[in-house]
Length: 242
Image 1: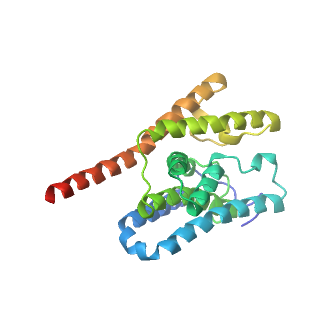
Image 2: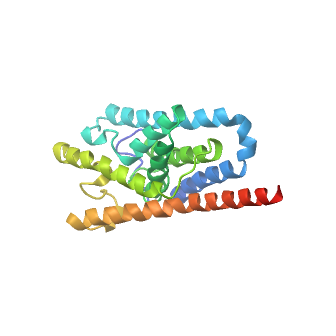
Image 3: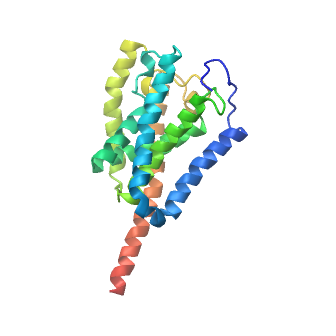
């Protein structure tokens, strides 16, 4: 289960991959459908999600260290780690603008990372479980804030979050050069076959990254746009009935 060389052979969209994705979507759907029943147990839901995030982050690094694999490229400076830290912060302190960023970098990007994961191990290897649990907990945390904390995202937050990510990417890009790392995958695509593998190389890679990020942010906003539209319609109907 903790072997470095054993239990490899992960296949994209294999039965175990599809079942894992199915479990994630089932949890999200259950949170939406049973949100009223879960309301009395909100604290349990909140702290379960909260502690899952640092548990995954810490255990992943411990495994790398204890198996002699850890190097500077494993510093928690990837997008999922930053999303994880931001979600933990939001659990402890309210921040509207902080949630804007989490919503855009911690929902669809994390889901895409599960759909086309940089993964070689199969279930029930530790890395398989930790990877999918960690990447599931981030969008689930965002969903929790929407359902139970009442966070909403205006359309203008698309550009705000896009600019924030680009500002953060500047020092990350410099750090990649200094440390010979690949945080945010700014240096090159992933080693395994993922969506980034189709982005080309050189300047085209960065142009495609920028365009793809903006497209992802716009797509990510669609469910929020529909939610706000529905809530506004309900509010108008309530006023008409008064």
